[in-house]
Image 1 (cartoon, rainbow, N blue to C red):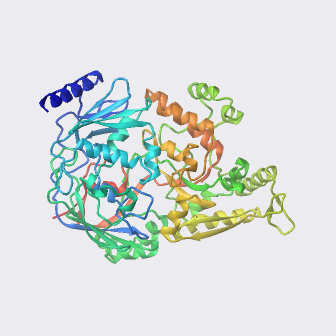
Image 2: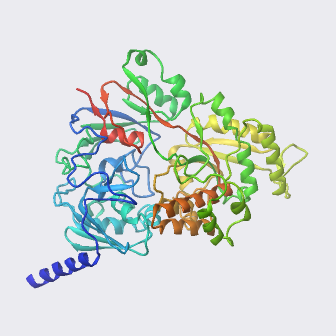
Image 3: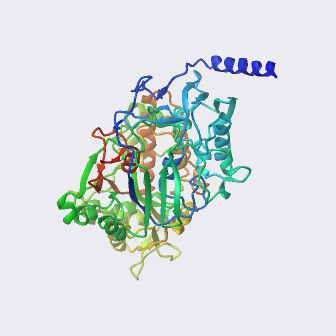
Length: 599
């Protein structure tokens, strides 16, 4: 027995030595980590924040599951953040870096084909069990299986396997070089105990609280209505540098609302304490009154440096009516953003021109020499317009352009695609079928965007109806691609990577539950994503992202919407937050991580 243990230790030592990598506390893609070994806490937290009190927050729709890792059921808001930890923690004030969380050091192989993590010996699951390398491997293998959500198989497709080297050490081996795979396997793969599901398939574990290592436990559930999380009094990571000053609420309760009006009135009535407002109308006209005037409720804009990504009406190209790119461009020409922003949104928004809006990945003007070189290598797969024309911009109605002029262009595009206005005033194809479609939504708030767009499309002879669905049915239809048009928010990081496969690759177009709602199947896009993921320098990554942006915009897969340059937040005055803001952050995740109840 002793000889076998010694042999295993020698083998492990040789494997680590042969990787040519030193153990480090942090990694940053294309740069050096901001925080040195031995750092005490992130700059954007208050390390002395009191840990007490409770906070009530809002949820939308309903929930019927405590498992966020499968397609089955709807899990509560933010359960992954509160209960599941990863091997490393991403820093919110660096473009792409991570620091040890469950792992206390990391080794990235010199050849880029493996990543090794050594676990913190103090790491524990909520039942007191030690987190082991076997648990990490089990989590990965389970997420890659058919009982987990398909997005994990897309996201980690280039990970060949996880290998247990010893109780504390696990190595992930990659099929090919990928510029970010070692980062996302560390900072984005949830780790959970083998005892949670045991021998059962993961998607059969629906209403049992996760057995993971995060700072919170499920305390109480009223299915579909409320859920309360309580801080784990035995949380193992209390004093880690990546957790100091974080997760300061003793209890967090989510109360679910069925529509935006009830949600806003519930907040003003004191049903919950903090709200990130996504409605310009509510922000301008709803968040007013005595409690705001007295300072009981604070209304504040928080700046950020986030890449804005893209939001828009996705046109499902699996539907014959949207298979032609000329039709899809015509749909965008009927969208009058300037009128909406002026008349409905109180001039609070900026138009989103790119799938990488507000970042260096955005394509502008004509291709530069680096983009052109990449596009020429794809000449057989791309049209001449991508090589020779400027990156398409969303249609505008600012003079000298106008809605009337845009609709005339739309009519010409539709005619070229075989659609003409019949004697009854309706747009029909050569078979006499009318052009009509449905916009699927789960909130009436979509009406403010969809109705003006539909009104303009009616001038072209197109009939549009808006269907507001129950959130559970909406989720099911979206997962099964059973819709004509749907709203999609495609957030973007400062360093895009594997999420692009799930959003835009041909393989993802046929995987239920993927983010490729548009059904994009383009070999040129597949190839550019492959090259982007294999990029070795940030310059290569930026060029590939800009070319990808051009291809997507020339495809007119969605009707671009807009974005807000700040987070709009209203909260009770008893809540407090750090004065130093992170650079790249989501409003709700930042609040859950770093706010506290003031004494």
